[in-house]
Each structure stands twice: as structure tokens, then as C-alpha cells.
Length: 105
Image (tube, rainbow, N blue to C red; front, side, top):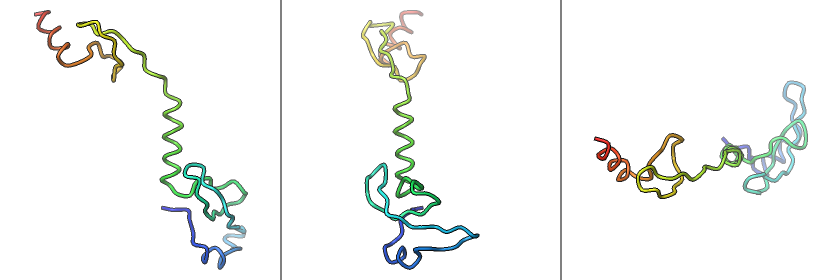
């Protein structure tokens, strides 16, 4: 789905009454890709993005910035510091995990 419309379509439907509301197509700039597009809305600010893809990309960036940075921990087998993928990780690699298991039995 795309919010973009062609210039010809924009010129032909400058003012359109749907359910008593007047939509005005205005030239806007996408907040993600910074491309110009003609968007419609009740006010000047809606919509903010030229397509659903740009809207999704913006949401992903916001979520990524909100995540806490992962802390480096020490491997229980070799003592090397590493960034764990899971919160319950204890070993830096499969090799260390298997060595610890073999040493325990």
C-alpha cells in the first residue's frame, strides 16, 4: 500500500468531498526517506510517511533505540568477555559449553 498519488491524479482531485469532509492533497516530505509526495489528510501533518514501508522502518528504528544496550559478561569456561545473545547465556561458544558439560560429568 502506498500513500503516493500521481501529479495528474492530484490535480484532478484537488478538492474532494467524502462524507462531508474535504480532503486537500498537499506536497509533503516523508520523514524516513525524505522524498516528496502528495498526501491527504485533515490537517497539514497527516500522513507523515510516503508508504507503509517507510512507516514500518521508522517504527523499527524507534524500537531499536529504545532497547537497552546488552552488557558484556564473562564466559564461565574460558573467562573471555562476550556479548550474550540470550539473557540466560553463560558460555561464549558451543565449544566452551560442551567443555564445561564434559568437565562436570
